[in-house]
Length: 128
Image (cartoon, rainbow, N blue to C red; front, side):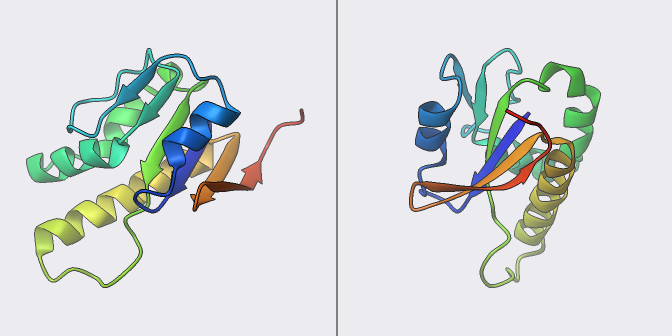
């Protein structure tokens, strides 16, 4: 699995399409559950927000379905930067998103940070 992350509006999806298999894309930015049948799954942070609102740990959903996303490109917005929100629900969402990113990065073959449309691979566990 390839995990691509970075700040909002940094060109993560465009980077994924340009550098990896650009077949089907599942956009979860409306909060829906990821369709692991797609090649690229983006907007995962919106799914995490829905999980946080429901009091359900997003990581558990990914753990239960791990075999389905092993060959996918997962794209998630890093929400850990900036001022810590006062609102406890927003803080809970950001913490849950961070936990999911830690889990996914630990299982990824490659982790790429995208900033201003430029990707920097920060982890690789395979040989090309």
